[in-house]
Length: 62
Image (cartoon, rainbow, N blue to C red):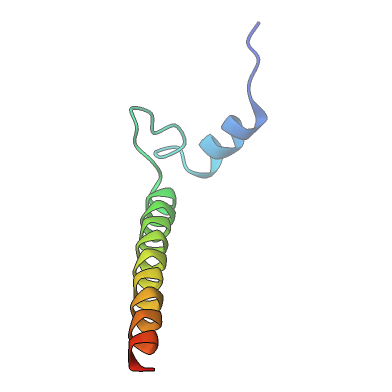
């Protein structure tokens, strides 16, 4: 007797090609989310650097 995961069956029915990518492959939507998360992290780091530089130059000007 086999048991099926409801989520897996649902995913397979909606997108059989990408339902179970395996081997470290993600669905295109997940790849885009991951890319955007990396971009957000990079932008936050850049923003922190700019804030520190602005504070440094503001202190130097006074």
